[in-house]
Image 1 (cartoon, rainbow, N blue to C red):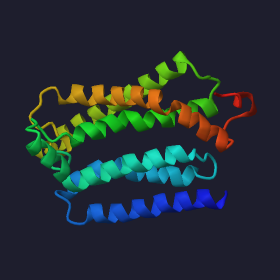
Image 2 (cartoon, rainbow, N blue to C red):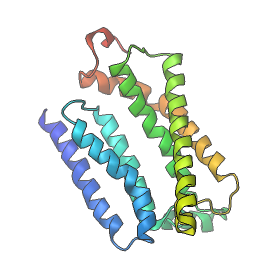
Image 3 (cartoon, rainbow, N blue to C red):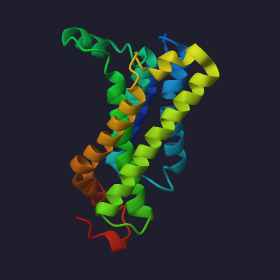
Image 4 (cartoon, one colour):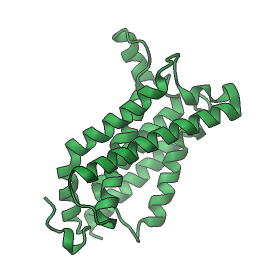
Length: 214
């Protein structure tokens, strides 16, 4: 591992820990905080335990960091009361705080690249329409599973999970969440695939029979 990569990893890890510490100090609701940041904490654990055996591209670690920070901020304020998006709501006369929409967009945007890297490195799939279709389908399945988890938690805890659901009175909130995750996955593939390919080549992360990726 070269020094530049080490620096990237240390900066991402230390900044994550620092923002995690800020996030847990006087959050809007501690139970909601735990529910919101739990995926980020689990992601960190997985990354630590797989770092030596299956190191991801730097692009992936940076995207995961961005997604994790969105979760930490949402956990601190709750998605319905994030101050910057409250300001946007008031300034633009919007119907709701749209921070949760951002969160669900990234729920597709970042996993799409994670899935793409795993499939390109660990399966016989090559670049093309089939690969993209599978990636988008998995992202949509992840989003639907998360909505089921939200429903289960709400059924189990009642009103205690109201902030976690973050519907803000929208009866179509679940459908919007899945749609935005779908959009995030598609846009991620369109915008980041070539950059991702360059990261894979630069990091020598592809098997020899896939070195001709363009």
